[in-house]
Image (tube, rainbow, N blue to C red; front, side, top):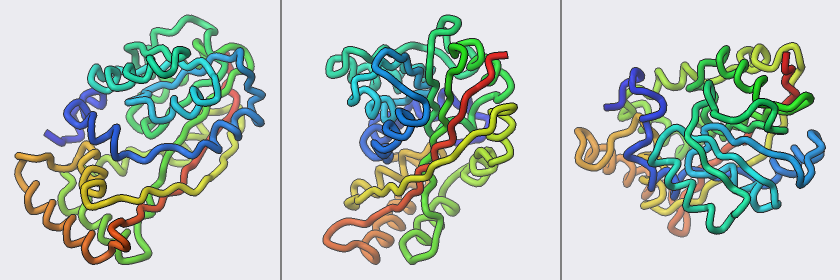
Length: 259
């Protein structure tokens, strides 16, 4: 099932391992940016909402911060919990953006990576205002994949459009500058953009594509045909056994009024 009506919290239940292995990470420069702009110190508490397998949480844990990773999907949360042995300042909890389960005024920074488009924004705004301490910050982060401009990226996009069950419907949900501005209002958010990229083997390219919730998985209708298309794309564009997916990583950040 890949319909847009599937619960957002259930969309990745069967894709946890490919998500963990093949989704792009986030540039470590994000942590440096937020340290400078938000005045982060080692005493702050960061709440990473819709944390998934912990891809974003890790860049803060590596700098010694305490992170509350909030994730509603049990399978994704279990993958995130495997990081706790390495990072004792990580705590994983069941919760949603609209009902995090965190105490009032318990976080100094709330981060959301690659998930804001699934939230009820009005309820999320109210919940974040409750959880943040006065003067607290929020950062909304997206890896925006290059959509075209060369043979490889054009071909990648074509595969998603041809085989992605509700790909276009999901794209329509994505955050716009207007939605983000309304979320942060009356504060005015800033944006920083960092280059990001993945160098992938054929196995990695297939894993990256299948990590998207709208794409066929092994055993499903059209999976074999899709895999053949992926192989053709790879063979046509690989250099030294890899292809490169380019991204722009956008960080929109600002203080949220706790009104």
